[in-house]
Length: 376
Image: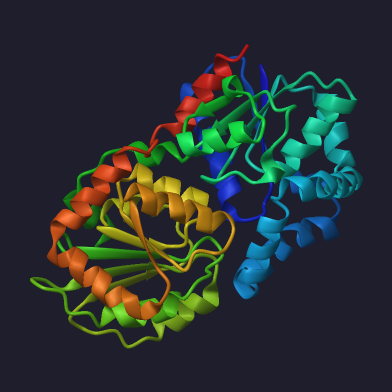
């Protein structure tokens, strides 16, 4: 059985979801499985491969309101009728190598964690009678028109809300599987906090705040770090863990801060052990990207979502707040009161953890593998 897992390197989450599924397949260690993980943009020309993620990253970093406007505009059903045709025209021009590769390889199942490949393969199924089973894994908790295709044989979604949204857009209920957004199986492991603190050389039994800037290091991380490090919480000092992602300038700037000596601060660049850092934290402050949210939920870790980017992140945020698994802040000055309240009143975090249980899917990647292996 030949299975391809295809993502697009446009934001880190799509790749992480693909890697999580790939790792779950490797855990099975089933003979006769040929599993490949591929970046669909590697089959396009250099300019398109650079442009595709660059537009997104530039927009969300410098023009978030513009990004949010076009995200909502292109999700309008009547407009999408025309936009989708233009988008497919450009996709067709830039995906010819991918199409030829898939025609030559003839995989039995393709799992897509980004809509670019989903749309290309849907066209192949519609125009070329391409028989491969196509599974689309939606890596946010909301649905955008870009994800929707009747040629998809099976959808994997994060919540019942996502399923309802897909059905409203005309996708058959039988095609939709509420398995969660796939996260690395490491996030499902239960660990002893004190032992993990010792491994990571951080203080045990101290109120610990984890700031995650995202894979590309965006957000007001430096201002948050300065403010939080000066907080005097009741009962004990505060411990602050800061992950700067792939942003060396941010890492250098934060390392240059003269932090309050009463609190303990550790600074990281890009890390491969975010699951371990989550295991020793009481709260995470982050953007609401689909994978970061799913990973936090898998670790039973309440979230403070800070200024979600209009579009998919805002949708993710609204869902989490509605379920009681997160709070949303829009100004750096609001962080003092939020953390002071959480540290002073443990019941607040306990109730958030209870809410998380209703939507967390820590075994999502393994469940996707199980679904694929049982697919007819």
